[in-house]
Length: 441
Ligand SMILES: Cc1cc2nc3c(=O)[nH]c(=O)nc-3n(C[C@H](O)[C@H](O)[C@H](O)COP(=O)(O)OP(=O)(O)OC[C@H]3O[C@@H](n4cnc5c(N)ncnc54)[C@H](O)[C@@H]3O)c2cc1C
Image 1: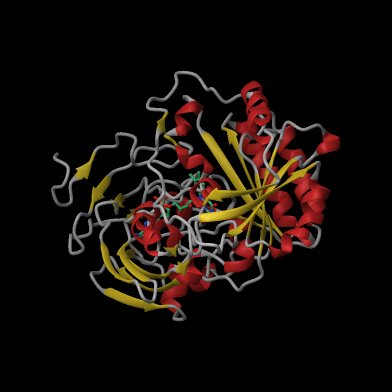
Image 2: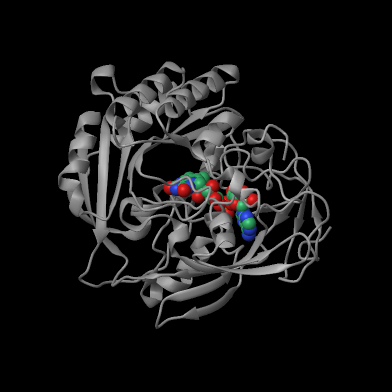
């Protein structure tokens, strides 16, 4: 079937999957190209750009509704920084328009290739959660298409809005949304690098010198010996207020065009990567372009092809601040004991702002993200052990990066789920929802 025809049923050519390729069941999809295109019948789920890691963007029992054809700007008020766009637009596409005019998205995740709808449905967070909250805190209104044909205009503060922000795509299809942007004087940032000899350095820096900085993230080296557990470096940044170029994000220049027949990511290459990247000498203070600070991984297109045929799983867990040094250490040890060293590991402080959505993941505490090659039962056992630590200590697992959280853990960490059912669309589901509801959804 030709691209661009209304409601084409797409073949599963790899586009309709998640980022890590685990799990990877075949998917059927219908692409919307116009706001009034009919929604398919049966059990449906919006699909953004597949940048989620687990099964939150999969719908094996029904049909995915591919939103990427709905990527138009609807309105941009440059005097107020209010932008309305269709939900299939990516943050990259938004930034190309707004940054040259002196506006910026106030919250961005670690890749700019997510859609506006996906950013809202997972209520994504960035390196400034402690200052700015999550993406949903900056959305002022959204339009929701329900499977029965009704359309709801939801405003920040109302219950439908709170159910849809972080609502995992289950309250309806977000057709368009309005975001309040933040003004910037330039695309330049002041960046400070603090080497971390271990976890204590992270916590003491966050409590002390990091306080004056708007953005922070630590990159951890999981190949470090036990006595240096949590070794790595902490990146702190704030906008440069002196003025300067307002460039759109750069095009992706490097590509890994084909999937390698073997995995280039293993214990040895992780060690080499850590030596070259994590331990590379960096200036303690530097002026850097915002794209290189926010999205170091976006510079190489299709970089997960380096993983070869091995799927990857991520795990992002937040634990309460009280006890965080002990809990983070415990989780890092479990991850190390799991076999393959985790390749990309970040540690972030999360702020205490009330969550924007009923099922939002971002909450006060310390968030640790790890990713692993999926090696079957051994990997699952390790992820379950990490989940147990989080659950026994009042933590939570991030649905956007989860492929195996148990129903009881979801119910505990997201206690508003019962209330949420009032807003859930009966004809919408996902593999994630089927799993955490124990197949009862
Ligand atoms: C390299 C990398 C770095 C990342 N860094 C971060 C980070 O720092 N912080 C963070 O929070 N996340 C991060 N993520 C996760 C990512 O931001 C989220 O998974 C995001 O939701 C993906 O958006 P997407 O458009 O690809 O949506 P998809 O993955 O396709 O879908 C995600 C969810 O959104 C729903 N959805 C999509 N569009 C709509 C719509 N129009 N209406 C209703 N529901 C919709 C889907 O049904 C699904 O439930 C990262 C992911 C990657 C690959």
